[in-house]
Structures are given as structure tokens and as C-alpha cells.
Image (cartoon, rainbow, N blue to C red; front, side, top):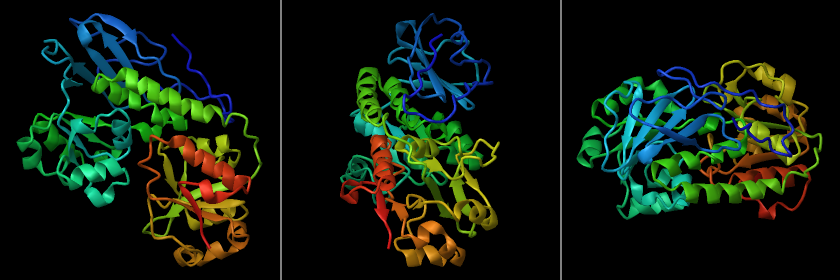
Length: 380
């Protein structure tokens, strides 16, 4: 099978292939396509950076999305039926998928890029919560209806609108009864795991999953190629040797940093820096890691730059706000030298412009003009 290409400027170690286990089958880059009774395998989607999913094509328009460590989804073309003997643990998505409940936030920008906003009828975020302007506008003018948060959906509205798919983030795993209730209403639940990708472009490549759902693979491929070209221009960025801490302080007062295997850590590397927590041991598989203030202090006190995650905690807009989180931060080198930055709240939802944040980090590291930054702001 095709070996996945590695990004020329990607400075971290070669990533180990992730096995997609369970759900009655095994499917990954090294194994044959899942065998589905009654269907004839045709081809497999070509991927460049994404490691958390695969898409298999079968004759007569059938497709299988395998989200690794999660579930498999059989896409059935409009006017056709699922095979009689399809495994019970495979979710069936019947096309057309044109009344979607978008409870996850990161896929919205990808649907906009696919010109697929019309396929979304219901939202788990109200207009004020969207930084994707097209989504906010659609809610304001009634094209999309607010149907309750992911953990408190309006079940009657989902049924009344004849919802055909709920797209959820992994947050739904903390509320399994909600997922069970949605599925009991005969609405399949698709869980987006794009945040678990190690390479930032892997996250963007999830546009191909949604392109497969909407039969817009060509549009998805073209968009992804454009984004990959933008990041290819960063391949020659030299490593500055400067250390960066990307973090926020949660409601319990504990620092939360990014896993060394997380896509944000990869962004820092590609932009020419080094994640100060690159050696943080973590076997949890989580993208973010909560640590003690003592652990944070010991590693981050001498870091060259601090980036506060304003997309999670928007309360830090000044140095005073930061020090109010914990007075120990006053000892930090980056605080004393004025090298503290905060991300814009729109960062997490902007999956369609992933290269911009890397460019912002590069500008920060090389102390260039910050006027062209989109996602980073220096705090005083």
C-alpha cells in the first residue's frame, strides 16, 4: 500500500502508523479493504497527512469511512439500500445527507469550503458562539436552527426537522447517554476526531471525509491541495532554537499544555520553534495534558515565548489578566521580557486556514512585523 508522505519541513520523528481496531473489522494503511458482504471493493482514498481515518470506495457508489479508534460508517448512495448483512457495529449513513446537526465546531469551516453549508440545518452552537461568519449569518437568517448544545440537544427539533446525521466532537464521549438517545431516534452519530491528528495538515485533510459524505471529493481535494501548497512554502523555515509554551489555566488553577504528539506542537516545530514540553511523558492519547503548577514552572519558567490559548479561555487580554491566574508567572522569562502572546478565539474553528497560525508563530519567533497576524496578539 502507499506509504504516507512526510512533510519536507516536518522536524519531529517519523510517526508510527495508527491501527484502527475493532468494530468487527480492521482497516488501516497496511491492510486490505474491509470486506462487506454484497459489495465489491473498488479503491481507497489517497491521503497525505491524515492518520486517523481511511475512506474505502466500493462499486455502485458505496463508501466506507473508517475513523480509527472510533467507528466505521457505510455511506449508502441515494436511492439504494444498505446490504442486508452489514455488521451491526457499522453505522449506516443514507444519502442525501442534507439535514445535518452540527454539534462539533471544527468541521464547520470545512463544510463552508466545500460549499456544503446548505446541508447543515441544525447547530449545537448559537450565532454568538460561531467565529465562522457564514455559520453565524445562517443562524441569524434562519437557514440553520440552533438545536441545543451537544450535551443538551433539542430532541424534538432533531426529529421534527428529520435530522439525518449528528456530527459530534469527542466531547460527546463524556455524555454517552446523549449519544445513545440520539441514536435511539434513528439518527446516526459521527464523531469527528480531527483534533487527534499529529500533523496540522492532517486536521485539514478531514475535509476529504466530509467531501465523501457530500459527494464532493473533487472540491475537497482541490481545497486541500491549495492548503498544502501554502504550508510547503514554510518548508525552508530554519529552526530558531527558541522554546514556546502553548497553554491555558483551567478553572481549577491547573496549567493545561499540549501533548508533544499534538498538531499544535507540530505547528511550533514547522514554524521554527520548539515546544518546551516536547519531552513531556504522556500515554493518555489526549491532545491536551493537565499538569501541576510545579511541573509547569520547572519546565516553562525559562521558555522564550508563552502563547496563551484564548480559544479555550478568552479571559486573558493583558499581562495583568495573566498574572491574576497565578502570581508565579511573574518569574517567567517570557513574562519579564514581554514575550507573551494570546490566540484569537477563532483559532480552533479555523480549520480551513491552518497555515496562517504557523505563519503567525514564525513571525513571532523571528520578531517580524506582527501587523499581518491573524491568530496571535501580543499582550502588554
